[in-house]
Length: 534
Image 1 (cartoon, rainbow, N blue to C red):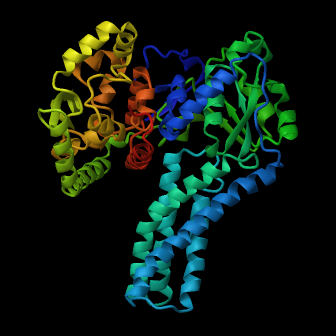
Image 2 (tube, rainbow, N blue to C red):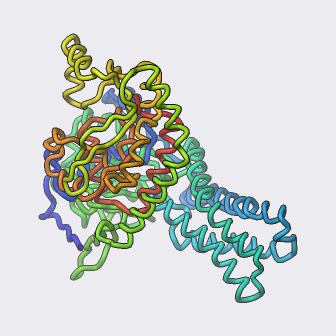
Image 3 (cartoon, rainbow, N blue to C red):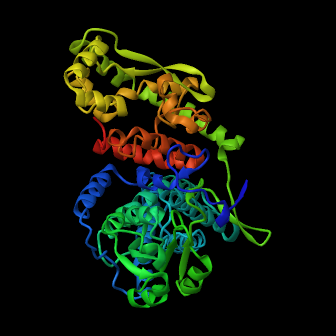
């Protein structure tokens, strides 16, 4: 599908109700599937500190433009090369131990070829410097580059020499290790470097509307993406209508006419044009002043279309956005279902001792059934019973009603989010532990094996919640609900219900096996650090 966007076709910014098939600009504020919940707390702290209308100076990289590029790129290069070689060493260790592979001079040459192929492939795929890249896309590109490098070494051995069994096993095991190790090391390097002042590229946001302000706050929260927003420029006639409360402490750098001078003075390498909420943005004037910015990113509209797998195309002389719907791909759906079946079956077998231990503890703390089933809505509107370990007392409804009658504030919280931070129904000890670690949802592996749920997907809802999804409900029905998803790795109970709906919509619009893979990685982190759970 190709979407052609023009100034006359731009809808007004409207978040209630949300337009079907798109994710509203306001969702930028909730796209914390890519930010740990700790960042949500940091955001709140930042908002409190910046509540004063006075301007503040944004941190920026003081290096020259070329040096910014070099210093942003080199840590990633060194991290990737180190993890790639470490993957090869890990793969070689058991082969040396079993004497299936011996030391010879050709191994050094193969290591050089491995690194050279990775750097070349990575440069083509945009991994260096990878500024502003989505972590989901970067995960895919990193895995592809690492796998291609080991495959190239095997192909070179087959073509120019003899590929021994040991070398074949070395490359095969190396691929399996590298697809896990290289992305993890790269993410770690980004997180560490983002805490410094010398890493990242200075960025200016063009447009002081809601979209531009949301982008500034978003990239300020995620410096690991490499974009360091230092301020906003806008048209004088529009900025005059803004007050300090709307800018909320965001540095205003002047009119768009000063953009080229700011580029030279502040060593700006990126500019993002955000027209959302700007009534009269003149793109000809923007282009005339932004022509010398090395990297100019233009958001095509006030809404965020499915973004991860879209690309631009020439359409009758103007730009069109080509959107790909991976849910219509039989191959992608087959891969997702195959992973669900294999992973859930293996996990049920491996975790069977844990099931027995948890069952004993639940029985000791609260007499009654070990498992709790509740009707949920699945793909296509079919209902099913989602299973969990029982973490609440058997008379939970009665306990809840008594509690809400005594505390009107908690009743308001329950009506808004259907969640309570200090839920009186939870079984003391084991119940709170299971919910905090998300282990209460392990029995849903059985739902996944049966095809009622998936490992990754939207949060399963009940019939009473359909009305709260409004126009987004048809999107929910397109996929199986998941054991984990964007909501679970985005602050979970720290997010509002409306934010959950937007996150579910974002997932459906941008689904691919790579997005599922990224969410699974983030789920492991969330469970280890118990982020956003109660």
